Length: 121
Image 1 (cartoon, rainbow, N blue to C red):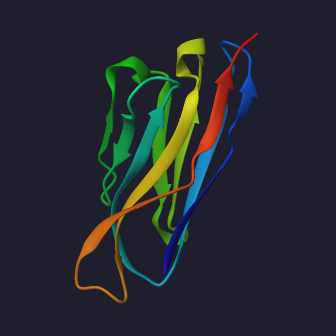
Image 2 (tube, rainbow, N blue to C red; image 1 turned 135 degrees about the vertical axis):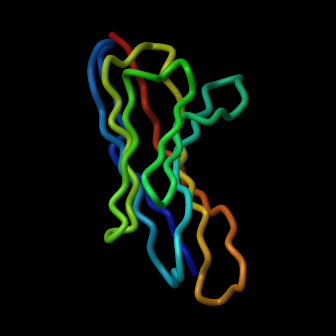
Image 3 (cartoon, one colour; image 1 turned 45 degrees about the vertical axis):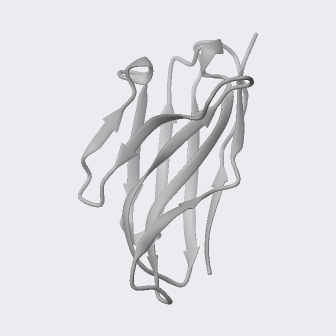
């Protein structure tokens, strides 16, 4: 069984910073891409940032220059450093990983439970 567990959310003032972490554990054979989505109240879930196993990154336009995604392959962990936060960044943030478990011939996306990020004064 594979699990992704997020941490690092919370309440922060506009202009502040937060760092999200997401650790994958369990019966893992390999991990491909990892990344973050977010969902604000009344809105659809949107992709925020992604990173390949080789370290190539991508970002949605609204967070470019403010957010940085990184990963530690030895720890099966992906991070999202969020700087210059804005009220419109308020959302539940979900991490995902394209993971092949030891019990499967194929990989699929696994998701974390979500962590709340609130940007407000």
